[in-house]
Length: 289
Image (tube, rainbow, N blue to C red; front, top):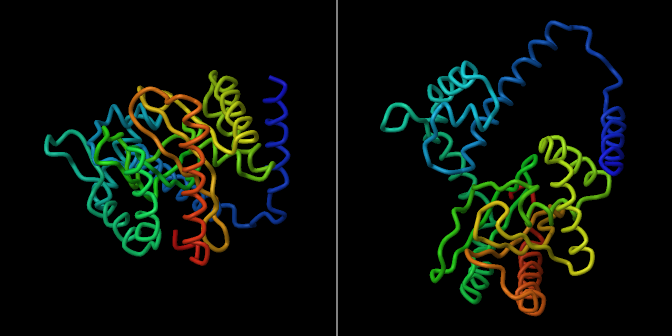
């Protein structure tokens, strides 16, 4: 608890330091802009709960995942459907990601250099070890997969390009947080602890154990935390110019392999893959990622 209290105080000091020096005189305009920003933020958060999946969701599922009221979810979904970012499912009850939402993703993939450069390197690892390999970047307290390769010989995890995993429950998220500068790492830990509610102390404790593995071995692992009967091994890496911090993992359905195999074979091969990606993407503008 003392460590969490330190995180809380440090986060409060950081927030105080970031307060603007000048307050706008036009309070009405400021309030209106703030309300518009808040509505947009809530709409984007609603879209995020689909986790990049095409699976339709009911209003009740959206209420549970967002924590918004039924009335708010109804208003937001009606607006997003009208704009084309959500579509009504064939049953007329559920909603799913719409054409405009899909177009944004396809335009990104068409213009990003990551897929064409990273895919062959990651696919080679996936085929050699019969695993899935994912490259992810942070989005608030989630990690979003920019590239994802599967071996044709294994059961496929329910993941892919555009899908998200929680930073706190995934080895790829823990590797990313570990690689942050100390102040940013504390802010992320505090936010994760706060979001986790009564489970905050246990969640942060697991993350800190992963940090110990990263300190000692350069990688961390997780088994059955985000998806049952799966495991993942992850390393941090920085790609592009200027370097953008990401996470790289290998994962599969099934029990955790022997730790000697992880230490002597899988982890070194994953680190080598990370170095190859860094080399190939070193001169690419990271704003294109």
